Image 1: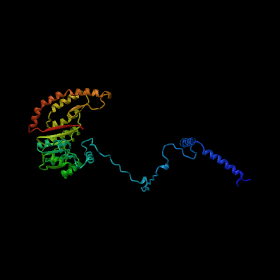
Image 2 (image 1 turned 180 degrees about the vertical axis):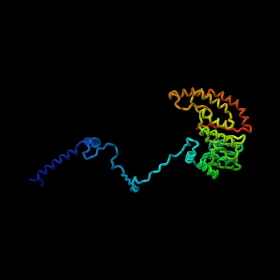
Image 3 (image 1 turned 60 degrees about the vertical axis):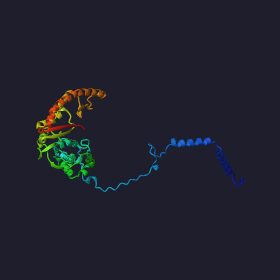
Image 4 (image 1 turned 90 degrees about the vertical axis):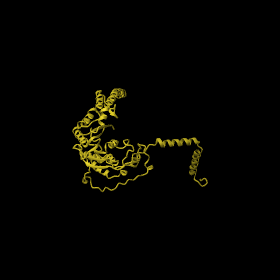
Length: 377
């Protein structure tokens, strides 16, 4: 028997499907929302990987979301490692002066790494900027302008003195330093010094350029030919051995005319013992050191306290060297500063008392004077 040409069993299946479809179409909306949330929650938190799937153990994004970067390496064309020549090892760059100041090769290496042919910065007001030696220009001009720079190194200062009218001899025992100074001799001031026009504008007009000579010379072996009004040694004296200091001081003394002056510029020479050794070499050579009695009295008083101190601009300062417990540093340092400062009044009185004899020696035409500059940096 057929219903509208359809077998009875097929009719039963059609009827059941229609009932189920109608039920789903009429289910409340909240059931759909709840079902959706369950499915979403299960996808995010409850899904267990199949045995064939890798288990994620980090938060790296899926590979397919990142661009694929392909790095191609060039084909190795070098010979096997065992046939390569050994790699050349170069010594470290020498940036500090040698420990032994008589080491010419060590100074050569040092100057080689430090050299620059400019342009340099020229002080528009003498002594305010620039190089250490420039601040002595006024004294050099006053004494006559013939100046020797023993141990000049690669300082552009000597060339500057010649440009402004002095007769200059720059010497060093380092061949590298001599080559650098000779290179300076070939440069015009406008090329060598970056603000030369500014300097000329801010100072008295330069009538004529002086003379600039360079020579390889060891200043511990005797003076060069000639007589000089001034000798300027910038930071090439303090590191010498005591015997070399004595020889150098005698050389400087012999090179000066009567009434001439030596400028010994130093850096970080601290303590009574070191300063006494340096000064004694100059005194033994015959130099007059202004105010030496007052200075030595002052240093002796400071040393007698046993306090660790360093001289900065002529005043004792307390450096931080763990000499006090950290929690009491300020308290103890202030206490010791007052002790060190207690000698200042008498020190100034001694300077005033010594001044007339110093002035007399400086105004005379015979004494050869040595000025020691104790700079810190």
